[in-house]
View 1 (cartoon, rainbow, N blue to C red):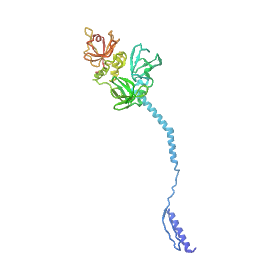
View 2: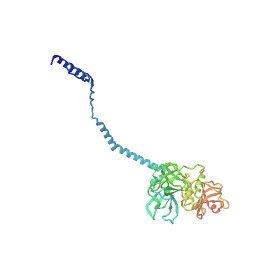
View 3: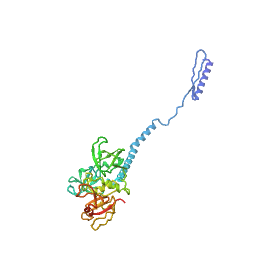
View 4: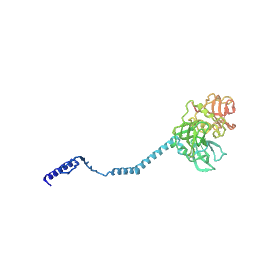
Length: 385
């Protein structure tokens, strides 16, 4: 190689070295055709390789491990706390609705269930429980087909075992949207909104819980835990925890109207529905549907409200001029307040809603025209101011 060629080669290498030091190179094309060299230069940039402190897969693996630990440890702990909180809220909700439910063992699964003084139908019928009413079973042993039970207002007696269900799901307020109160006569509960079969009859005063409500119908949980449908007519919808509103000062007329629903119903001592009822039960139901917590037993009713004094004339007839609509009256054949035999609701103008042993149905009776009934009046109580 000639000295000229060696010198050219040396210069060319030097030029390449300078370009690489600047982190770029030039493409070099050498055309050795003949003795001429053709050099075409083009920049080529080489990115620096960045150093990594840890592998790419490490961060995702850490996240997966952390998530797994959360699922295994923290989530179950939080869920357990949530369940405990829900249970506490549920117990509290039950207590707010009816403290008696904390001790209740069964509910009435019929339109009404007679409560007897002894475990047989030949004994005195004390009163009745209504559809879906909770009861506490005092003796788990069935006696002659009867359970010994206690109602929420303290009444005790015997009820046929097949009139009750031990399933309390109809009072499962956790899934309920509203509390439903029937305020008029009785109402069918059907299996479907269109063409459904009648699966139960709820009488006036029944309290149920609805898990679905529209402007036309409600879906209620019935004794045993199944569901049924009712139209909205004659139903009062309340919040689950809401008590029945207390009556206003002028609600005596509404109380009387509620009682008058039972005109011509069969008189049955201790009955509690349209198929048979007595005046103490009418007083109880008319009070319940109007926000009054009146006892269902006549002797206790005679101590409810405010005592009204009245005088008797020379013929021993009571002066009823001071009576007002909605007052409740009590009668005794021997005129002894300790031996009450019947009750009545005063309407107006001397008329009362009344029935006794010699009547076959609930009727409006004029006190002035029935001296025998009038002279046996021994107690008058006022429910409304």
